[in-house]
Length: 319
Ligand SMILES: Cc1cc2nc3c(=O)[nH]c(=O)nc-3n(C[C@H](O)[C@H](O)[C@H](O)COP(=O)(O)OP(=O)(O)OC[C@H]3O[C@@H](n4cnc5c(N)ncnc54)[C@H](O)[C@@H]3O)c2cc1C
Image (cartoon, rainbow, N blue to C red; front, side):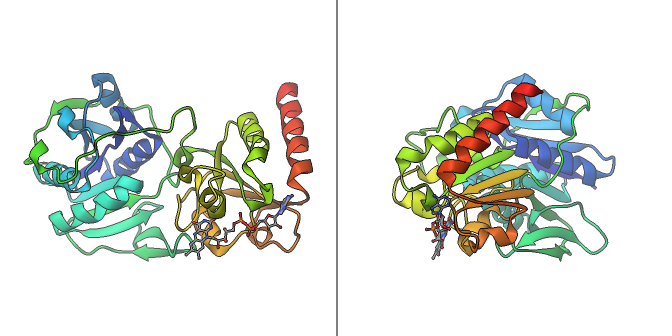
């Protein structure tokens, strides 16, 4: 078996989702060396460090003309790398870019696709999420080559292996193949990326207005958490759209999701129900969120949040 993994990076830095994907690739490779492919400028140190998670070799396209993501161009590069190493399995993280790359790579390689995997292949297939995280399916791809995209935050990260050997890679694409040109990228800075956060504090319409968001932010700061919101909150411009979670927003799977003043509509739950532990805070004891929450506080957010924040701060100070 030959396994190729796409090592996604942002500005030359590799994400936790990439380390999960490489660990997963290593675990399915059954001892055969795993090759990673990385696109765009990145330091040699960063590339070599991918070995610690299980990539023996990293094929690297350093050309800065490939810095900006383009699904068509990136899919060609990954497919070229897969062909070069005769990959029978191609692993990607099921991130925003991974979701658009995996089907394209599968088409190019005439491979079966298993999207949103959450576990290693087993006799009855690969377990994956379906119906917006409301269920699981075991899927078998019968093709000789398979593309697997791994749900983020669903698989362990395991380091401690030797550094990778980095090799320059050139694919059959050039900058001229870009059909869409990115003029400017404005990044949200100073925030914990939602998709990578272990803890998320999220606010809904129950917060009454943007002027009250310090309550969410204060608790998030104490917990080292990212902040999120329901769709109406971002639609009303109380918060920016990059915080909107749910069916039409970002799907997250943190270890802890604290939903404050959010009713728990099915479209919201679609993006957060994969969280490991859910806490709901709501004045309405009949709020649907309480049906799926592990812990519920029936109470006014304006009273509960400051008390909760102070209690956690006191607990932290005491330890
Ligand atoms: C096609 C489609 C896609 C959608 N996609 C999404 C999506 O991706 N994400 C999403 O979030 N929604 C989505 N929605 C909207 C969704 O159906 C709900 O309307 C939305 O999630 C409700 O947001 P909310 O819970 O913040 O507001 P509300 O439903 O108004 O709930 C506010 C909650 O706050 C509680 N509350 C009020 N005051 C307090 C207080 N002082 N303290 C504590 N609790 C209080 C109330 O009891 C209530 O439960 C979508 C809808 C459609 C039709």
